Length: 112
Length: 115
Image 1 (cartoon, chains in turn purple, brown):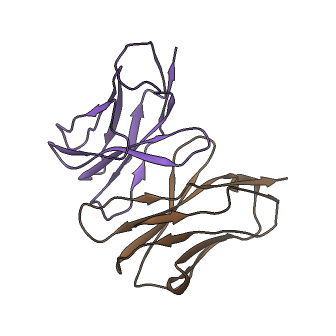
Image 2: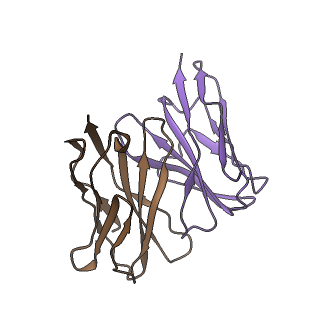
């Protein structure tokens, strides 16, 4: 089945810890995206990548980092610099930036 | 400026009622795409429809229909005979033909369908 997978479903972070959220797609899409969603809010773009080995900051990139070493993978690291990381994180992909974005099931990050 | 407005924050209806979710957008581009997504309680965003700016034909898919009017910059979504399973947050979004521009999402409308 083609689709986007995100893991883990729930993630707990301790103070001062970096954590990495996984996003994998087998849709052969060039573009991939990370969004953050806070309770009762819309989606805010963290980072996006339109091609392997290239990525750009979105609206709220501070405290986050990404890599795009493979077409199918776009992991997001939430660093200790992100002071308020508790949120729902959604990964998406599209064949190009103009095309429909398809979303993964999301990862809920909680701070202990 | 590119912007999507969904003025209805929350809507509650009783099962079998019809409901319309409003979406108004702003853009100076003449070529663009509009989208609707559904976010059920599980959290994943589900793609519902894409419409390009050249195609103002209304679309119907089962109980869902969409009304695109360029003159009023609106792309409204109607659910006919609503069901409890329609309860979700619905997002309208806008993107552009120019390479490198990303989606602009509206804030979402939370629809509750009561039995």
